[in-house]
Image (cartoon, rainbow, N blue to C red; front, side):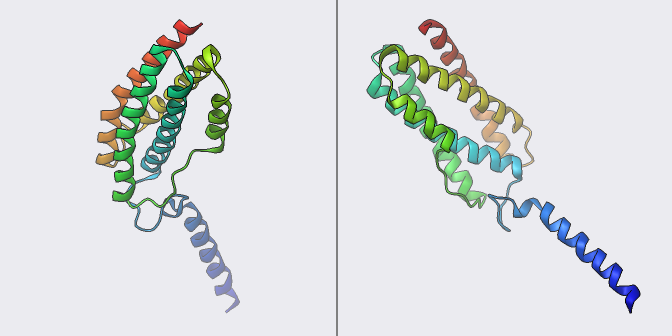
Length: 177
């Protein structure tokens, strides 16, 4: 009987290790989630980034007097609202359980941004847009070959817009120096 205890304990240990490694138990997944960790990252980080950029752009509409910055802010609100509605649909369709909010880091940036005015505001806002869009381009590029066709299609369709946003933000940043 003693000889069976060690193999049984060994198997129990292996099963417990395997359950810890199970992606299905990851932070934003449940037993019904229909995408892998990369798809969840795209949806979650895409929504968080979109919410952040919409909020920052709304502040830009109130704080900036620069017509180019105002046009850019309007484009951000329009384009990211459209992308976010698709991401919300994907989140529900793929059965992802997560409350979408702006991260503490982004909220801190937004709070700091809201205290600025004039040229200081414009420079800070556009610098934020450059940084955020560089991250978004990387995120979406990583998912263009995702296993899930819906994630892959969305990443491929959205990437050109994100690259255009990044290019425009870099142009604005150079003109504001």
